[in-house]
Amino acid sequence: MSKIAICPGSFDPITVGHLDIVTRGAKVFDKVIIAVLNNRSKQPLFSVEERVHLIKETTSHLSNVGVDSFDGLLIEYARQKKASAIIKGLRAVSDFEYELQMASINRKLDEEIETFFMMTNHHYSYLSSSIVKELAKYDADVSDLVPQNVQRALQEKHGRI
Ligand code: PNS
Image (cartoon, rainbow, N blue to C red; front, side, top):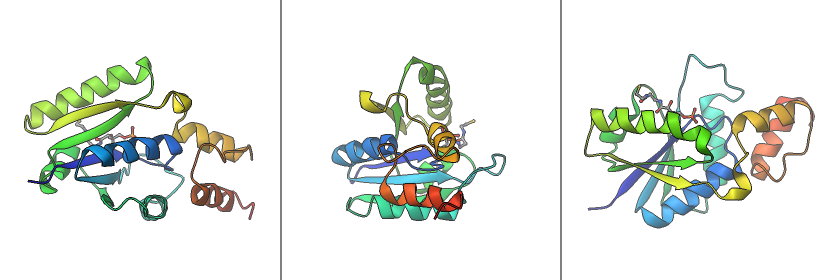
């Protein structure tokens, strides 16, 4: 049976740190589905459709990676997709407490779906979508932090191109 993993997140927008986790996860699992949370309580910079589109462009070279969006509980979505795993990146100790809580809740909801953590490449340990948005707002260079299409999309959002 093929092993499907879900890589969930807000991805507002996807960064090279996310891409690193997805690329490494795709070497271990038969299929990785990047699942963008449609979180109505947050005020995102990019709509879900824009985020999905940017991720599709960025991962088009990865044949076993799919992109989708979801509402509601992650574990329900994972079950629906017949996934056996959730993959997450861990950047620093500060991520640990929240991620432990999420992994524990998800395990309580469904013991058959395992959460796997990958240590983020140390080059990206400081990187987050929020940092990227902050830098882009002030027109700082984010070319090392996000894929090219995302850099362009950020410039467009801020009316710079
Ligand atoms: O990129 P983010 O914002 O850190 O991703 C968080 C995400 C999407 C993984 C998390 O918020 C999530 O799984 N949300 C779905 C709701 C859910 O299942 N919550 C856990 C049980 S309370």
